[in-house]
Amino acid sequence: MKRKTVLVFGNPLVENDALALKIMPALQKEFPEIEFKEFDTAEDLEKEGRTLLILDVVEGLETAKCISNFEQLHTQTVYSLHDFDLGVTLKLLKKLEILDAFTVFGLPMNARPDDALKQVIPLIKSSLLSESETRN
Image 1 (cartoon, rainbow, N blue to C red):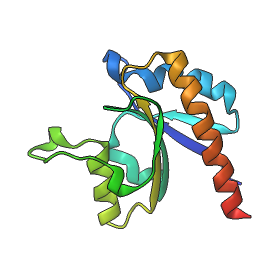
Image 2: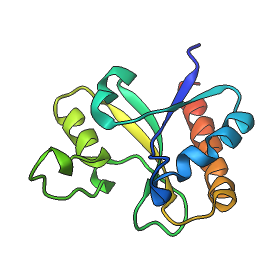
Image 3: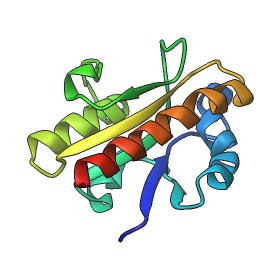
Image 4: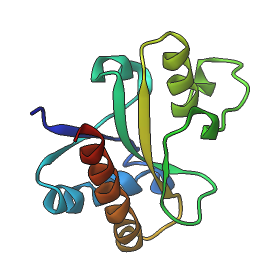
């Protein structure tokens, strides 16, 4: 069985975008069966498979949340390539029939690392459990 991979987004140089990267080492210890892979940009997502697991901060969240429905992705109008964000990219890959499904483990932008970790661990466990039930 192929090892699961969670793509970890963030920018270590931008404080409110670095949270997922900060908690990645603790998640690797908590889930040794999962590869947590630092992922720099959304440009090469199509190379990661047709079903994606992603860890990222999400503006506007009060607590960690799973987002797995394309309708839940809030996107803004795209005027230039600078306006492409993860949500736009996921919707585009779906429209091109390159992506079947995704789960974003969304972290609140201003959460403390220890709080975010406590919130996201049950979400990841629940996601893994529901996926194994689907296979059986």
